[in-house]
Image 1 (spheres, rainbow, N blue to C red):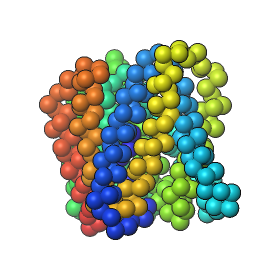
Image 2: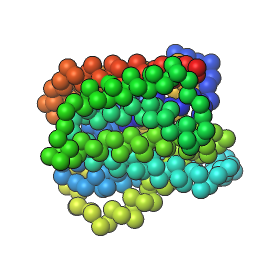
Image 3: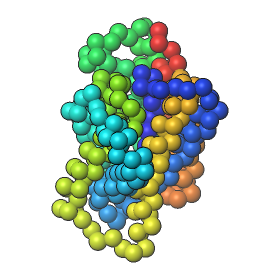
Image 4: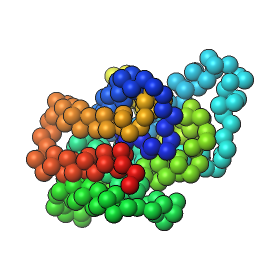
Length: 296
């Protein structure tokens, strides 16, 4: 799962159509990943599924770095802030864990719609954490976006359905992850950030997963392998999109996830979204696109 990337970390090129294509592919890949996660979450601990996702991430990325050769690999492992990169990785791990817990009990589309509000939270948190100023227009967009969240989630008895709170934990972690990327990752190569984000998640999940391990049925092994592979390939597609074209151009195309989440939620899990979810999503997506394309 992903939200549109932050403009400050884009390394844009001059191939807009290719960038849009990679972003469309990333949107589909993330929903396929989360569909697999939701299926596995019915029989396995979310931590075990998170572990599979990060193990696959590191296997694919490690193989690519090995192919580049040790000198290039060593250069990519250099970071301006090791502690900052580790913090980024832990926040992404937290976002993944909240997301996978939420996906076990909630419809795909509901989790995605709440996740789309991460750019709104980034804008708010950047005020105290990064001392950024927010103009009246951007502040109004944030308000509209959060009204969309309220509409999409609808009235919920939080005591009877505590799982409904999980997407908000995911969104908070992901917003803080984006802010730490601004603070610590802007001077590092994207593959460097990808490496440390995956390494932190792989180490933490590997330390915890033995306590929650359930033997994997032979028939579920392909799904675990798919989750691991998609965890790496989806992130790679996101990075390639950002390297081919400006973030302001390609990031709105990631909102096509709402189409895929609706489709797979219905076909695989029989979820039929309420009209209010789409209405809220329109407000959230509109606010997110405004924030991504306007700086004043």
